[in-house]
Length: 405
Image (cartoon, rainbow, N blue to C red; front, side, top):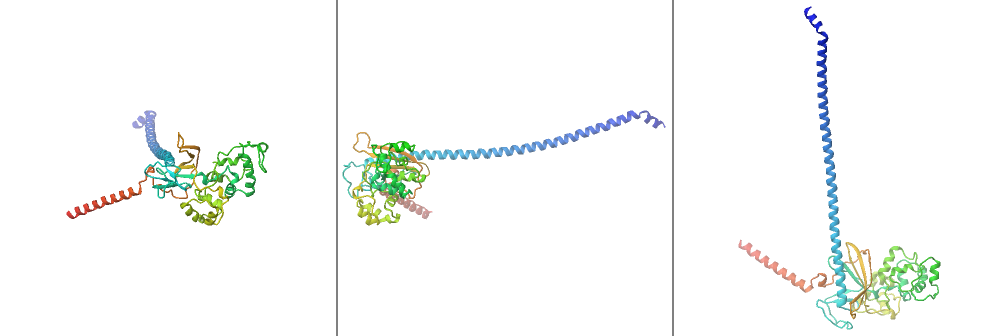
């Protein structure tokens, strides 16, 4: 009874103390669990943030690595293009120097190791020179990896001589319709003459104004591409063929056409033969000039579209020098006229343009000139012999040392 009374006497406070103790424990338990959960969540967040940071750093490193590689490649490419342009300009200058200081035979520039001063009107003797550079557009290796070619412009089709007979054949070879070419020729005559007289089936200023076109210049074409401005030339050729017109034609005023320095493709076009049928003609023109229509017919089976007086047998001083780097950049074409008797410059630039380089079908030939970084054949043989002798001596010495050992 006494114990019960005592519990009764302290009952509410006792229950309150027990309740407080229980609540305190619950609060502590709750706080402990909250702290544990928060700690776990915090550790999970830090881990996830760390992983995301690592992923971001890896992506940033990969991007920087790729960007660095691209910049290094761009810098390397820019360096190569700069060096190629230096080599191209050096090659062009060297070719012009050789053209101005050496002699030309019936088909090529003949250069020698030693500078000789001879009469330019006197042909060179047989066996003269140490090398040749053909004047029919053959590719040659220049400085560095640059390639160059020299073309006698008398070996091309003159667009300012529509009466020559070669231009219509070239246009038809490149895909133009014969009727369209026949209508174009008299209009070309009116385009390049210096009067306003209308020829039969031609076109003068009134016809161009009525068609909403610019009036004809009544002057010679400055480029084969200007042929597209003649009334009726619209749609004459596909766009891809106009570049070939520029390659195979010339705006120069030449008195005829030279089959000795003519590019092989143009000879195929004008003679209407297959490329393999040109073999006898190519062999014959290496020995001497081909100037007879009967000789051309005998060698190829087809007569040329020009008469005897329109066939030239010697290169003219009007040349087309092309230089390009096969790995990139532009092909620079420069038309020059050699003026050896001039008081100021030994050559004169008539025109210059750039175009994408064509895919070379032939491997560039070696010129044999030391000016292009080549070693003369005799010196090369001597050098190889000397190297071989040194190698032999080294080999003998090594053998003696081995035997001694």
